[in-house]
Amino acid sequence: MTKGKAAAWMICFALMLLGPGAAYYFARPYLNTENTENRQLSEMPSLAFDSLKGFSDSLQAFPAQFNSYFNDHVPFRSQLIELNSILSVDLFDDSASDSVVLGKDDWLFYTGEESIEDYKGTNLYTDEELDLIRDNCLVTKEYLEKRGIEFVILIPSNKEDIYSENLPDYITKRGEMTRAMQVVNCLREAGIRVVYPRQELLEYKDAYDLYWHYDTHWNWLGGYIGAKALLEELGIRIPEVEELTLTQTDFSGYDLAGMMNLKSYYEKTRPADVNYDISGYPTNNMTVLQAIDATELIYQSDAPDERRFFMVRDSFAAALAPVLASNFSYSYMPHWNGCFTQAMIDEQQPDIFVYEVVERRLDILLSFRLSE
Image (cartoon, rainbow, N blue to C red; front, side, top):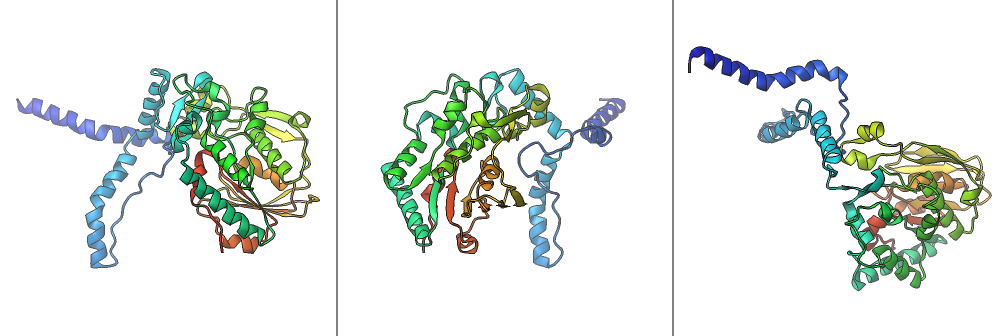
């Protein structure tokens, strides 16, 4: 090989290494640099100089940490990931995420946390597991009743169960019994109050979209139906769906589209998701005192019911909270994950304690237990 050819190859190789970075430097102001991967990207590592041992340890870990940082921030990474996801969905009719399955008519469904197994009925609890759930709830009921507190469990249904006709044809039920039905039957037989608004949701599912197409959660109308069922259990009646004023909107969380790195793509290329602004029920001058979804939701209102309401909840409570809070003078709703502690019960002195857990997370009841 001549020196000229060798130099040309070296120049080409250098351009291959440095070209994408240089192009990205100039193109970055015009690109969407939002993290679309539904996870925390690695940060640039640093060396510790506070001590010789600290420096040695950080120096030893630096290469692996820098490799993770570089892989997460390589030029055009987000654009390439999005392009791969688009090709998977539009060309091969396949999800770009193991956590998402493509349904009919642009519906997306969640495969994580055994959601599909819940629908198919292939993950039923054993008798021993049901006994443990029952015993945990009975101990919790006794603990709360000693303090004059009502105890109710609320179980929102998985989207996969309510809109199963939009699942792909290869996903079929193995039987009519599900884990949610097992738990509801077991706890009700033991005298535990359980609200499981599956039938109420099925009653309205054909007339309205109650869950978002591109998200795992129910929308505000689905949440209203769930809240109505819970309030009826607590002796409070609010208007029927037919009595409400519903204004259709296109707000959605798009969490399933986000799991495929396609949130913005779905917003631009798919029919707008369906939500409803709801009016026509008494809000009783409900006021938000604090609303941090990851920690706690706190409300007060002029509702005639002066019972203090306390609900340990997950993200499904976002659509429940305004309706519930409008019907109690004071409402406190901590998130179960990293926020709720048993000490809060004595601090808040509630009259009603609700444990809300979506169907796909019922395993929480295997360990949830309030006791002396």
